[in-house]
Image (cartoon, rainbow, N blue to C red):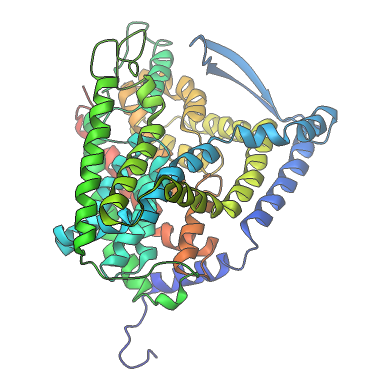
Length: 516
């Protein structure tokens, strides 16, 4: 029986508590990935010994021609495999782009945090936003953050935790909200982003197998993407307010790690208000510089061949640099105005402090990069993906059930192969022609891929930023672990996948336009 004055937990809350408890019993993430590395090594040797292989059509990323390819399981215990393990240790880590993105983002974020800009901005947001709207605003911005590629993981998620803390809510609920928005809806946006160009190009290459004159454009999924952003904003906010916040309850600041700020005062001092004005001036000056670098014809940050700015351009490809400078300039100018960070040596000290705090995460990324490289080398994920898709292809079911089955297959494979481009290079030449022959437009197939490829990002351990979110959580709760994040994200993953797939089915059934 529940104690007096407490609300009995629901069955779902008890289930998630059990998931958290079991999940937190697992070893440190570094140990987990060392164990997984061992499993991949042994499994690759066994599957290679049995001659596991698959033949398929794929799109050549360089020529965009359809080519026949055979993929075999490659052993890590033969001569070539052992050479690869030994010689690729440093290259694996150096090619793990999450490390560079994280360090670059933290250069700016460290200055913004140390100067006090981050907390001042969040307090300002809390002051000007109605209480009911904060969750929806954070969910909406989290989804749109994918236009900045992976930077949303490094910026929006911790900001959401701080925002929730500022209004007296549990910061872990804010982290979960941010993670759901950034990861769970990663492939859709209200803006065209670089990923769209690659996905559309692969879709057209696959569609030409059936009709050489059939092509789609960059905005071919625009209407569905806009509807998905609004739809998922409501779902994420609803789950946060109705499931996550009640389950976590009131936050106890005593759980925070040493050095973590847990102040819940949302008011702004005179110095903080002055700092925000200075930060605004600094941001406007930076934007003016970038307007000169992007808007004129032939500007340095436009595509030198096509002249485009949005899509494949130096500006979009190096967007993390712009984000870093936004935080660096606005953070320093805030510090000057507020009197918290005036001199260049103080700015450098703030950057050094933020980088030092990444030591554990960088080591984890080192181990994780080895696992990802070994798993990719063995081709286990590719063979599994093609085997599942072959089973679905031969099922002889109708167009809509096949489209929905495709969503499920993509979601399952996303637990093992997180790269959106790599998976679409495999799936596009299989499912685009197949579904086109059944009367399904290539735009619909691409939209289905977006649905299947997103929600699982929030719970797969192969998401390079999953471990980083665990680190964010441990700032506010020293006892948090992998199980904590999995239990928080499961409701989002399940409901986003089910309801978003339902939206896709309704859209296809009604024959609504997918985009421009």
